[in-house]
Amino acid sequence: MKYVGRLLGLAIMLSAPLANAGDINLKLAHSWPKDFPIFGTSVDEYAALVSEMSDGKIEIKVDSRNKHKSAFGIFDFVKSGQYDIGQSASYYYGGKDPDTLFFTTMPFGMTAIEQYAWFHEGDGLELANEVYAKHGIQVMTGGNTTMQMGGWFSKEINSVDDLNGLKMRIPGFGGKVMAGVGAVPTNIPAGELYQALERGTIDALEWVGPSLDLRMGFHKIAPYYYTGWHEPSTELMYFFNQEKMESLPAWAQSVLLNAAKLTGFNMTIESQHESSENWHAMSSEYPNIEVRDFPTEVMDALRASNSALLEEEAARSDISKRIIDSQSAYLKKTREWTAIGDQSYLNNVGSK
Image 1: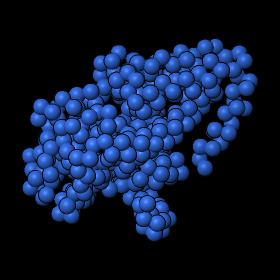
Image 2: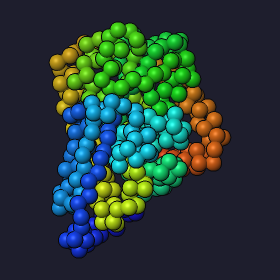
Image 3: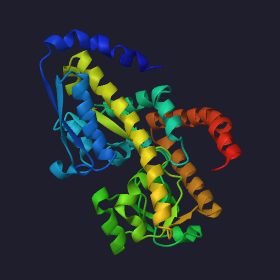
């Protein structure tokens, strides 16, 4: 395993240097409102973990969106050095560099466990750092939502024609795929989603899944809850200013990276747990929620749009082709095991 060595060596690296180490004070910005469940609170837990692992020698001041006022500004904050560390979703920064879109999730792509294997045992993390190095940034995985739902819709989707002109909050490649079938994708910060849907500024939105959707109240204004296809494994990331990282001793860099990885594990488990708890509450307390699968006609159109988009992206640059080829090859191999393992198990035992 590529990163076990770093983690196992952490205690050894810490034992001697910390005795004479000076205090290291860092600033971190994330994309979420203060105390936002799972996404935001995991960052507070990260800062606490870094302090604990460094015996208090590294202290991180965390600023939420409430403080810095720019939910989608994390990339620029870290690149410029205004903040030493950031936490956000990579696909928010496709406008800065289109190759950042690949490292959150891909439509019809890998599940969370498959994608984590690609990041840490395949070459996913190396490719991500190759992309971000152009901007003076180093990255580490930071937590996964697991399977996301396809979104909340004000009206039922019965055909591809129903997507034509549909205004939907959906970022990343999912948004590009929807645009390919006639929808109008947009991206809106979390705190503005309910109002946009309620006022009809948008007709539909995807957010996460039961883990976070219940508290947002979307079920009160959009009765149709569609199953997922576009974000099977949405990964958040920690962004580190490369110049700042290189100025730190090796033990401090190891603490920051390994704490991010461990925080990511914790956030992923919390996401799974909260989705389980909240779906139980949603299905029992709000029986009017209508769960729907997209019709076969719609799924076929979305797959065709996705395939065309991947062909365009692969032709765009050498790095985009290498990322797409890597994801495709890894998905093909790992899905063979998922199919005979998890999928066969679920098929055989059923849902009870």
